[in-house]
Image (tube, rainbow, N blue to C red; front, side, top):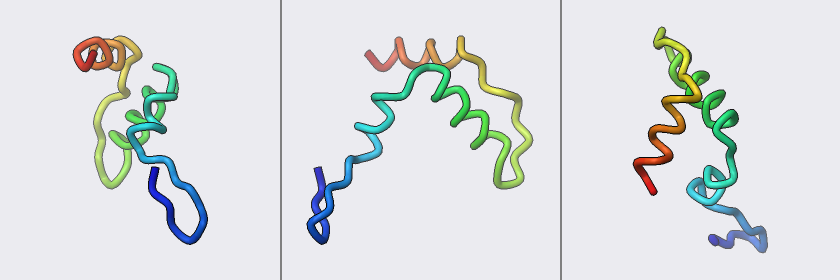
Length: 55
């Protein structure tokens, strides 16, 4: 955990590990449809498939 000015910050990895598949789905869908992107909605099945691969 990084400490800066007496404040503790958790890293992005630790934060993402607490996300549910539904949270990750919403996050990925938002990114895929932001910044000028026009990608399709991420599905929960896609999120689960990636979660299984990384274990």
